[in-house]
Amino acid sequence: MTETTHFDIALIGSGSANSFPGPELADRSIVQIDRGVGPDRVFGGTCLNLGCIPTKMFVHTADLAATPAEAGRFGLVEELQHVDWPAIRDRVFGRIDPITAGGEAYRRDHEDNANLTLLRGTARFVGEKELVVTGADGAEQRVSADTIVLGTGSRPVLPPIDGLEDASPHTSDTIMRVDALPASLAILGSGVVAVEMAHVFASLGVEITLIARSQRVLRAADADVSARLTELLGRRVHLVTGFDTTAVRRTADGVELRGTHEGGERTLRAEELLVAVGRRPNSDLLDVSAAGIDTAADGRVEVDPHQRVLAGGEVREGVWAFGDLSSPHQLKHVANHEQRIVRHNVLHPEQLRRSDTMPVPSGVFTHPHVAWVGMDEETARESGREVRVAVQEYGSVAYGWALEDTTGFAKIIVDAGSTEILGAHLIGPEATTLIQQLIQAMSTGQTARDIAAAQYWIHPAMPELIENALLQLVD
Image: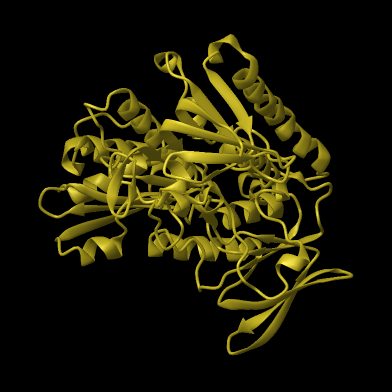
């Protein structure tokens, strides 16, 4: 039997988990175990290597590539003459890959980490606080720890569609590193990853077929925002809604998707396929059931408000989880916050902090941007509260008028009496930035009445969109 090595702390993951070690823990022995992400199992987590960072670098490039379509309105003539995909791809990963390699080398070799042992491999539970780590070569090591911190994230899923796995589709793990742009790309899915990648590849000249099972894209957003984005994306890509995919086949010409649509059978074709229907927590890879750890129906590890793992409905002392592994939000800023909560609670068990005290915002970097926080209108009305709703069009304020924006809007929902801000929903240029002032107000307890007229709003700047929406709610 393999000998067990005991540590004070076992830290599993290298995304937000990588911020856990530090000087305050220098007196404790730590083993950091990392399976890696993507086909190459690289260190550093999803956000850095496969998610937030590279996708936004591609989005910025796509935004630049898309400007000729809008230039004519402003008396300009622009054209996209050439897309050098290898140069675009290599610029992105030429910056990211050295950070990844440097991060792993720092953890493995730097004197700051004298108390830390880095193990690369897949960890799985074999007891309440015992783990077996299987390396890429199949070798196994057994470790135990007094404190276990789980930050193993999530991975893309392939739905159980006949032939899909055999068709070798792309996921967000692989699509950004393809050798060449396909002439056409089918995107199966209609959520955040799907609409962002539709914008990126359509802007670079790829013919996009976006396939949604429902009638609208981005169903997690407020219904009005979702409907507007569905309309706008439908102008840029071949958008097929209400399509239920039943089979996928790889053919000599590309990929073929068969399904039911509007009461009949239909076949869609493209050179390549991107599957972006969601992600699953990596609890199965950890085999958390072997430790008696509770999971939700979607595979999330169950935790209490302090991020302590639950087992049989009770707190399992000394075991913590955070981020995509345990959160329904699957957002990097949530993972970062929850990791800070876990770190504080491990260091100060007598002063436990909760992680669920702030509203959780979301941002989608498609074209145009979408952002929201708090309740949508339907949820607010169903809550039984009397609410007021303001909708302010981008084109109604000076900077939006200068942009000639005719489709963007801000929607703010408040309690009719107190003007407590219950939710905010934006679609339009820089929506992901504009919403921050409303996130701040909601997080600090400021009402619409508190912020509408108690400060100057720079004219003629875009935040006047928020000001004018708020003024509708406090008269």
